Length: 301
Figure 1: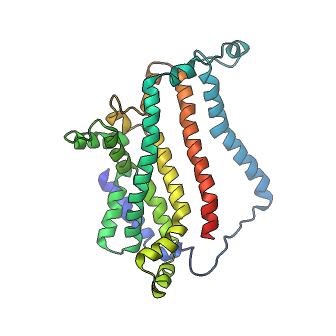
Figure 2 (figure 1 turned 90 degrees about the vertical axis):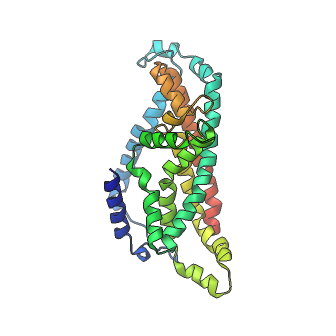
Figure 3 (figure 1 turned 180 degrees about the vertical axis):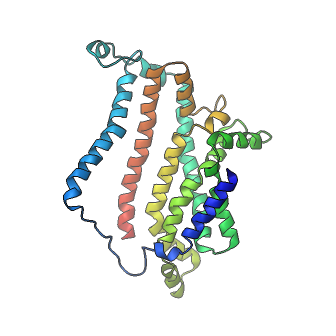
C-alpha cells in the first residue's frame, strides 16, 4: 500500500511538473470565461435540484424526524403523536456529550488553524523551492492518504504512549493535524500555483523585501484559498472518527465517538439529535467562511 502510494504521488508530480500552465493570476488583468449551457440549462438545473433533495434534504429531514421519536417508526399519525423532546434533553443534559461537544469545537478550530499554518509552509516550499527536498516534503505530506485512519491512529497511539501527550486533548490535536495535513496542502498548493512569480519579482524590483511582498501581494491573493482550506480542515476534524476511536479516552471524548457509542446501544433517536448538532456546527463554519470570503474577494480585486 505504501509503495503504491509513493508511485502515485510521483506520477502526480510528473503530470503537474509544468506549473506555469496552471497560472491564472498574473500581472495582467483577466476575466473568467462563462460557459453557455444553452438548452441544457434547465434540465441541468432540475438535475441539481433532484440531487440536492436526495443527498441533503431527505437525509436531514429523516434525522430531524427520528430525533423526536422514542424509537424507530415509519411516518404515520401515531408516530407524529408520539413525538417529544426526550432525545434532545438526554443529549444536551449529558455531561459527557457536552464535554465531547466542547472538545470537538476546540479541535476543529485549533487544529484547522495549526494545520493551515503548517500547510502554508509546506505548500510554499513545494511550489516555490525547486529541489529534491521539496519533492520529498510533498511526498511525505501525502503519505497519510495511503493508510486507513484507524491504522494511523494506532501508530500515533504507540508514538505518544511514552509522552505526556498520551490520553490528552493535545495528543488528539497532533494526530488530527498529522493525519489531515494533505487536506490543507492540496488547496493551498493549487492557490500558490495560480499566482505568477512575476508579481513577487516585480515587488522585489521596486525594493520590497521578501516579507513585504509576501504580506502585501501574496497573502491577500491567497486569503480566499486559505479560508476555504481552513473550513475544509475544520469540517474534517468535526466528523473525524477513525483516529478518534483509537486515541479518545475519558476526558477527551469527541462527538463522533459518542455517536458510535449511542448507536451501539441502539439509541437511534439520540444518534439523530447529536447528528443534527454536528451538521449545525459544520453549517456554521461554512456560513462563517461565506461571510469572510466576500470582503476577501473584494480586497483581492
